[in-house]
Image 1 (cartoon, rainbow, N blue to C red):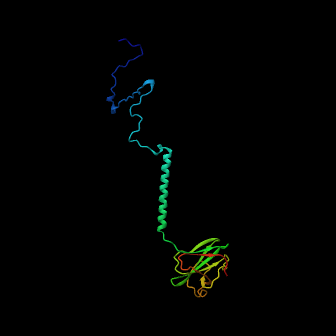
Image 2: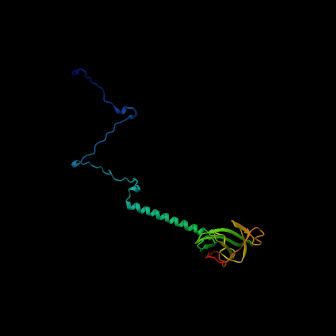
Image 3: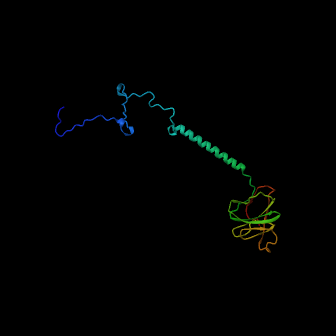
Amino acid sequence: GHPLPAGERRFVGRRADLSTLPGKAKLSTTSSPQRGEGGRAKRRPGEGALRPDATVHLTALPCRERVRQHRTLLHRAALLGAACLALLFASAPAQAQFTVCNQTLDVVNLAIGQEVEEVFQTDGWWTVGANQCADVIRDELKNRFVYVYATDVFGQAILGGSPEMCIERRRFSIRGDKECWKNGHIAARFFEVDTKDQPRWTFFLAGRNP
């Protein structure tokens, strides 16, 4: 009931009921943790313990455990790769062929003659470097005798023989071995190789054989 000093006003009203605000907003209060002896906060039972439904990430595992799991995965991947390679090679059929290995110190050019469907056929050229090999026939060998003609980089024959067959200066495949000049081809003497009826044969070209 005392009068207020000049210039001061007092607002009098009821305490606001927050439950009546729009959206039913409510204030939440957080109680301070209980203190025990020595001023230390007491931990409630179960507080800080790992919940049964908690998920343990790999990064939380010990370093040795992560290394062990990594090695296990690598081992399984290696076994799977080996199994795939073994299956691939097992399913691939064996490939017979006629191979010529150049044991000279020069580059040589090769032509091959063989009987194909009861007619002699010559094919060329294969260029083979020194101490290298070339698979000149990739199919299964059906003939006991295969004929080889070889020249150096100057076109000089380095392998002598008696059977005469047809060749060309550029890449060719010629059916027939008769009257080479008359048919516009070049006659050349091929060296006869006896494969002993083996499905695979390697011929070593060691040097000049006039």
